[in-house]
Length: 126
Image 1 (cartoon, rainbow, N blue to C red):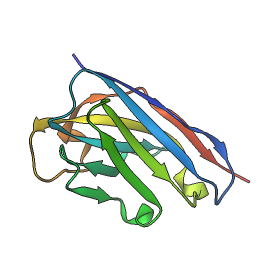
Image 2: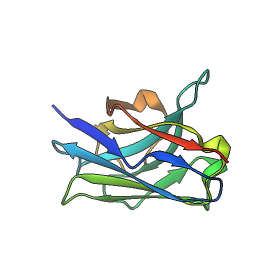
Image 3: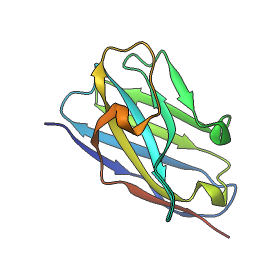
C-alpha cells in the first residue's frame, strides 16, 4: 500500500513562487509520478509528470517554462517548483503514482495513475 501526502500549497499573489512536495510512504522508485490539479467546476488535469528515472518529463502547455518537476527516489519525494504563478493556476494539486512500472515515458492522463494524495490547495490571487 502506498500513501502520498502533498504539502507546500498556500495563498500567494500573481508572480510569486511555491514549491509543492509529495512524500510517499511505500515505494515509488520504479514508477512514474504525476502532478494534477482541479479547480472548482472543472475536470482534473495533468500538470506535469516524471518518469521513474527522471529522464523523461512532460508539462501542460500553460505551465511550460514556469513549473519544474523533480524527484528524489532516495527519500521517496516528488517536487513541483512553480514560478511566476498566475490566477489560472489556482486549484487543488494532487500527486499520483503510475499504474505501470519502469516505463521510459510518463503520461499525464489520470487513468494511468492508481495511488493519489489528498491534495494541497494553491490559490493565486491579488
